[in-house]
Length: 376
Image (cartoon, rainbow, N blue to C red):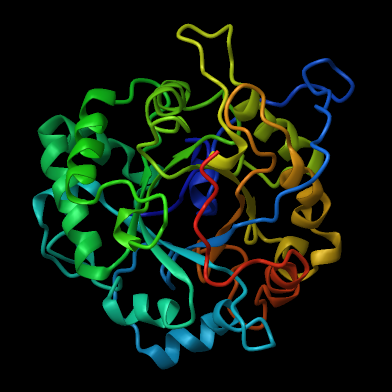
């Protein structure tokens, strides 16, 4: 099978879940110095990003063309939270295989290296309702393909990603989950080539200029990638990437655990060699599950009991710790809409996420469409 999972530990059990997870060691024990919360800023900053990764109906393959009638029947909750407004302001179609994109593969599930289900019709389904669309290149199942593609020609891969962005009018997310020896030289070539075609745009007006990266839930996995991206691409003084997504851990965290993970990015890791610099709160989102295993999660169906509700005040007010000047993270990303796994729950009717994500969109005053993002 080409795709079973997004970002779990590499154990067979985790791969079979098909959920989006990043392996991360346990956070500091409650009450320890490492877990002590920083004083929040006096005033919070409203959430700007409230988005969902999207897996189509085949566990992230996007291997068939869907009719709009079928797609809408299973995904209408994303574009209408009950009052005619969308539940999210961003959807990330997941995943494009980087090696197939580089090689321009044509087979039953890909056309010129792009999954056949990622069509302009699907993109327009969301953008016509004011929802920004991006494509995610990678996922943990395609880590080896990232390695191979970057070793072959990172520059050409970046050029092909930029051409794909132009073709569909979307942004691109880098999801390269090599936690041991990422090819940072090849990835730099990819980013340089992409930015040559689509320069950084602080206004957010050009959807193709939106280029982001996924990092672990905290600073203790994907360390090399995290360090390089924070030091070179996510600086507020000279930004190259728009922002990072701190991905979900191996299972849904509590609010306090999620905040501890996210605080690691804000603080950085000065004792690491090389050190991971602090990341401006305005340069990343935090992620939560809306489909996980066999459990229908309150994050999907019950906002009042959800982690996004419990953590929202912290997310909106966490103070900078050496990078950036404004308080508050950019917002939330959710894993994942539609059918993220061939086993377990998904977000198709009757288990839509109107009660969790949709209600949260109203409660958190999520802006539709997404505004220009804070730069500091």
